[in-house]
Image (cartoon, rainbow, N blue to C red):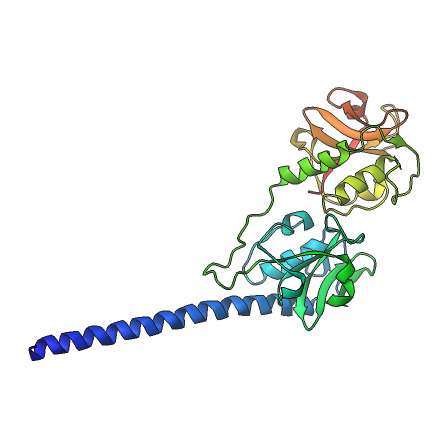
Length: 300
């Protein structure tokens, strides 16, 4: 071997060693960056304790249940969904005992089925969530909610080089379909004015909408006038499946006081409950139902 060959071989060996070393360091740094973002999300969630709860509020002073997580992840440059149902399908599934700071944790008041509220695990057996009942962002002991736990999701994968959810946000149309499907299973259920929100044996118009949206992971206030104050206002020309339509008492009523709510089901129909048919479909386009409309809200 000539001196020149030996020098070239030695140089290549050094370059390969350096490349391997740097590659390992880069991989380690990437993993640490992911872990850092998870921790940062947990720290942001902790800093929001005491902020006011407000349905669907996106922060920074007030937060809805899902919107707290949306906001916290946005602060570290990660865009995720904005409804409990979409977040319940984002990222990767982790077990109850394997949660890490920054993971999304989901709970159901009944302890099973679709989640009705959610939070961010911050470590040390604690999680943060925006509580409707306590009207603020609160800190809770994770293990004490074990009987209500229904799932956990990890948005940031430490084995990935990209800071993006592994699954996209659930399209609005799928959530709307879920709402309609939830409503259809109650077809024919009797109407009862003032029906309790805890029963599915009878419904009035707003307890029906509250129930079927709740089963899709979306929390609504109890009565129709309260429901009309949440969500985004849309015009009749922009109606989409799943929109809530609020109506006054009659076509000739001089007052726009809301007395009825229905769900737009697409194809010119609404799904709602009233009088003798109970839960039913009705034609909307060109009917008195349409003429009674006061406002339309999108909460999905």
